[in-house]
Length: 129
Image 1 (cartoon, rainbow, N blue to C red):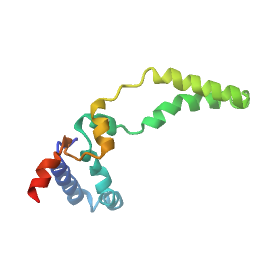
Image 2: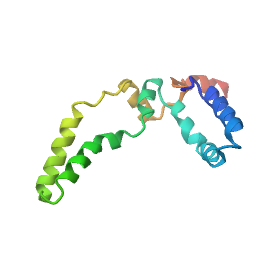
Image 3: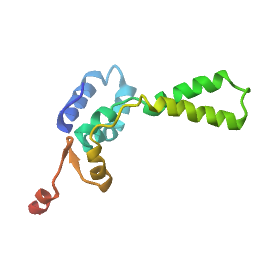
Image 4: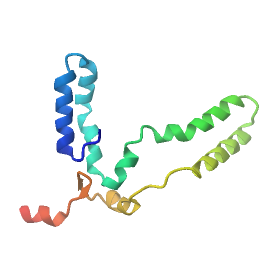
């Protein structure tokens, strides 16, 4: 379940905590402890959400490399091992998905604020003060 906004995600977490705290106490406490980190997701552009939800992009990249290097353990010199790892990663990179919302990256790097995936204009905040 992907909540469309931070407020709905907060409500979903609260409901989950009420329902499962007695049965799964330690897991629920972990969820409560990491609540802010989990909800940081909403502070990025909505176009990036599909990429942020991935479980472990680095592990999937290096799984092939680890599999091949374990099979050839001891039969390679350090130089040929580096070359093999480079070529494996180079070949794997051809199948990587392109990032969506690359036009938003300069804004994220510049520190532009996003709320529920939508850019917050600084002029609206300055008029309120």
